[in-house]
Length: 255
Image (cartoon, rainbow, N blue to C red; front, top):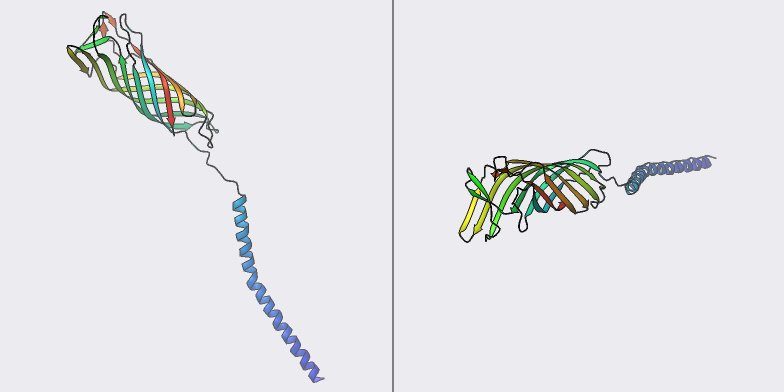
């Protein structure tokens, strides 16, 4: 009987040892299984998580425009000749005011170059200019006024843009304030050249309304000056030279 009892005891000890080893292996494996499960779930979540796009975008833009410049309210006898052009370049800072960001206020800085080919000749000096109308029978090669302006636009902006596409319809319009940096008038004929700079009769501060509209990069553009290019001190034949500028052309917006 003692032998049987001994065998039973030894068999129980072996089973206990095996069970202990199995439990130990399970305890060691479980943490690795949990870690693997977390990694797998994490990668799945990353793959299934929607891509969040930052919709807090702005239409900050560089602009470049090319215009045909005409003079309105010309005194009797003054006419434009040849093709008068204008160029401008600048930057607009966009400030959306609605949740869809389709309505905004824009402001920025720019520079413009304008020339006007006409038959108003300016003589004398910048401090003592005199004015005359060129005789229609006179022969001359050049007569133009050139200005360089610093510009401050302030505009209301409406567009159909989204953060996914920069191709959209737009209507931008507002007021533009300009400061005269440089001015020069040049008259050339067979007798020589007359050049006058820093004419005291030019208005230093100009302002006007403008509008641009179109689709994508290229848009039509128009500017109407609200005050005269010349001061009231500029007079010809007893009449003030109260000419205003109307500029029509195209404007390019570049992000």
